[in-house]
Length: 413
Ligand code: GLV
Ligand code: MN
Ligand code: MN
Image (cartoon, rainbow, N blue to C red; front, side):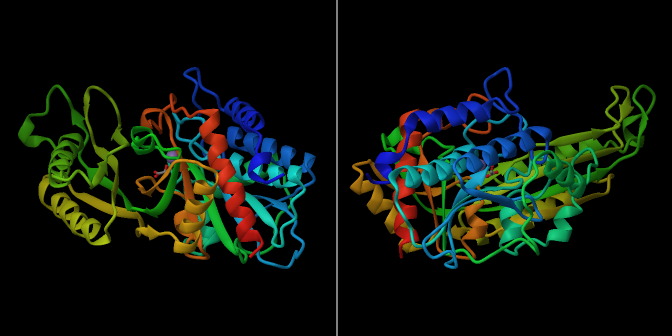
């Protein structure tokens, strides 16, 4: 039997349901933020399933969790597939988790079909892809790829001041796995990540498989505005240094400056913190985040200059600074892997289309190490980063069928 025919739709769907209980929210989504107890529970779940199938499990110094199915040549660099198990605070049950469970299902399908591969095939759950609790996102894969320094990441703090190193230690204590010695990273032959599309194109076009060609570039910033706390009832306007009033001027100018006719540039202010957060005190400090994305680096560069000019020119009388916290260049995937995904989808009789990714993924970092690509499947109305995110068991299984065929081909090269 082929790998694709051994993909078990019911098992894959049930695994999603089991994982959705870990951090499950009343609206049917998940709150399983990076290095939380819910993240630890998901790690234990995956590791338990892996051990039950006789696969080996290990972690690394940033907490990436690996599952290994041995090849006939154990010394050959493995083929790797996976995604992330952490979620947005009000996340869906498929963003990230699908890529991990599809990779694990691919390992199980190879096992069930009795298929031997020359290279080992491995599944991975990368640490902190979302970057909503700890910045920056796609952290585990970036450390693995050598793009971010391990020590810098261990020192990151979440919004409440919890240091990542401590949260990671707690997580690994709650979800123990053998630790791979040395800094994260090892030789990988190739990488393929399955993911829900998180946008509406596949559904609108009636296609089952997205052959992902590229990921747009993304940058994140934090803007900090210093004001002066004062009494809300007594302080005249001229005497105020109202940090929130300044923030609204900056934000309005930024929305204006990032509105392009083609609607290609993506600009989001997703988190605003007003301090001290009291109704009758003029705000003394505001911080807000910016997430900005575009397929072309020079467009991001030009708009970053605009944002900086706005911060410099429109915050008075409040001092304001803008700090860039991530800058991930656009990624072009490997033509060989792209072609393989397209060919396998066609051979399985699955409708497909080439498309770039609007969302960021761990694959953007791993693509620097080895030939890489991605497989998208539709999600309902394109909705993601939302508890109502949904996908069908049939589409999830179809993407996994393509994945297992691609992994098998890569592992026998
Ligand atoms: C990942 O969730 C992203 O922000 O693209
Ligand atoms: Mn994701
Ligand atoms: Mn996400």
